[in-house]
Length: 153
Image (tube, rainbow, N blue to C red; front, side):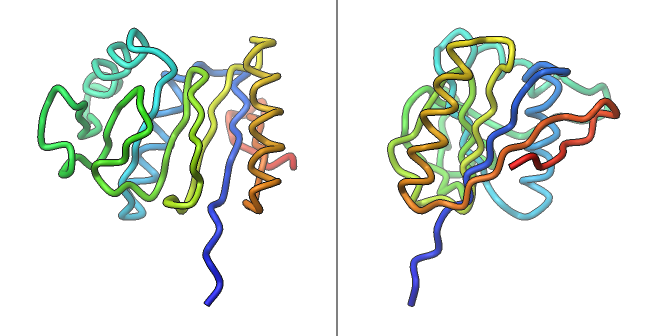
């Protein structure tokens, strides 16, 4: 049987910051019955996101944890700066410059990058080429004026 190849999605942030976009994508991930790992490029951003996911909406929060919280394998969403996947996540989110060496364990790998940061754009292009070379199905998404995400490539 053929190996199922990961879908690699690139979300280009221009109109809204990560803090607006990531919770919505995580909500949709959990609605599908998937678990997620969010890999951050640095510990400071990890701390900020850890707090934000509890408070981003008055009427809701996203259940998540870090290695410090324990029970890593039970977390619906696991936040890390490393490349581990303790909760058996199907979806890996890469934010703030994080990259993953291995696409294979995941149904989806989601790069979310800042379109106002030249270094982030250069890195996203490199990761796009790497994912294509690995045989992944690669798509590129931009936000329209109405806030909806539209596939551009």
